[in-house]
Image (cartoon, rainbow, N blue to C red; front, side, top):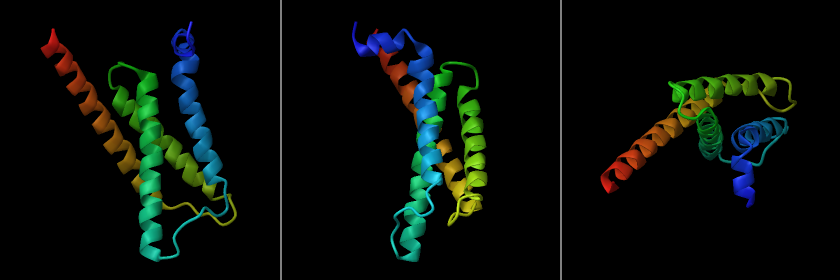
Length: 134
């Protein structure tokens, strides 16, 4: 039995461990008082915004993967991602050198929304290509 086969037989680990691990990574990054960033103001904002969008986009896709084919799974994944993003900004209020920022929350939502839309599009495209092959 391969490792992937073993993992697929243990859905709690296969589906939910990546969500928990990614959330742990976000928490660890948020606990850092100062992350490396460009010294130019606009570049710092761009890098920070794209990083937030990417990190929370991945989290949204991991939530959607774990929730599976449930009705409204993408909406639930978005909601759970935004709740975690909100808790992340709250957490940053207690980290020296960090502050909660509404713009970060906006970027988190944009990243999550775009990632989930891309995921839904990809799944529909795969389903239609499978139907064509049959």
